[in-house]
Amino acid sequence: MKKKLVINTIGLLLLVAGFFVTGNVKGANTDMVDVSNHNGYMTTSNFVDMRNNYGVKAVVTKVTEGTYYHDYTAANNIATAQAAGLYINAYHFARYSTYQGAINEANYAARMAKADGLPIGSVIVADVEASEQQGNSRSANNANNQAFMNTIKQYGYRSDVYTMSSWLGGVLDVNSGGWIASYPYNASGKQWYSNNHAWQWGSTYTFSGSYGHFDVSQMYDSFYTGQQPALVDPNTTISNSVSVRGQNYKAYSTYDSNGDANEGTDVMSGTDWLSNGIIEIAGLPYFHIGVDTYLPQNQTTFKDKLVINYRLDGGVTAVNGKGKTITDSNKTFKGGTEWKTQPHMTYIKNIGWTYRVSTDEFIPVKYQQGSGFTGE
Image (cartoon, rainbow, N blue to C red):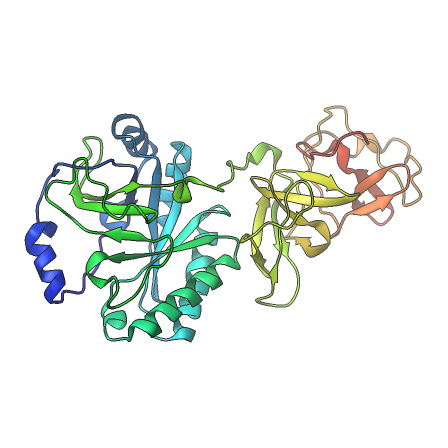
């Protein structure tokens, strides 16, 4: 992971065996590649080349380290990997040695990842290989890693632990999932750590279309290519962002299109999410923030203002709070205009859900591009 490796006796043997080999060794599948500032700003064409010519399916980009470092290339790498049609995830270089420290670092990592545009449902990995963990007991490391992952999940992300094979069973345990690093000179045809999500088998791989050396991994399941939403289309975005309301650090559940709570995709209060549509579930409005992932409107508020790009070029007719048409209002509310609305939608009998754009003026949601409402 372009990391600061902690070298112990066992680790030194691994280094001699192949950590310092340069160029491409005989390899396993290059399903996943991880990048950081060491690789510079990755372009869409870099990732397209990896996808088309090397079979890369997923990217993991560094976002943070400790509670003090934010990788300046993360936002770019997230955007360009998505533009190349690859699944994008993130990793955090762990410096925690205490339970509270793990929670603090998870909060920092999730907030920075969110600010960088990492989509909900992506994985944020704890990269556990530093001196802070080496000096800890095995049980403490296990508890700290679990605290990190539990906190990450509260932001709507999934989580995993990355570590080197020499630490397994001694410094820490990876009882389920996990992304394990171990570098043989000849990885061709091997299936090491196949009970885990992925095996990182090389750290000096080169791609003809990209500069420098890369860490590459073979995946064994869809963990790093699952539950990730499609890109939000800015031309049909309901709002610049939707803020989750409520007490700080309170987790709110998201739901699927049937109204059932989604497991492991809670979102934290105070976080912002792009939405590309609204649907009605059991008579109530929900914001669409990911693949089959919806936030109840009554748990959210609009951040700054709601951008309304009407579907009809000729304008739309507003109504008052009693549902009566406001004469000539379509001359004001023309297609493509933008209006600041009240924080919550209003339901008006015989009209349906509406945006309040003035004291007693309401625009039916059905006119919103990509609203998702039907039959109103």
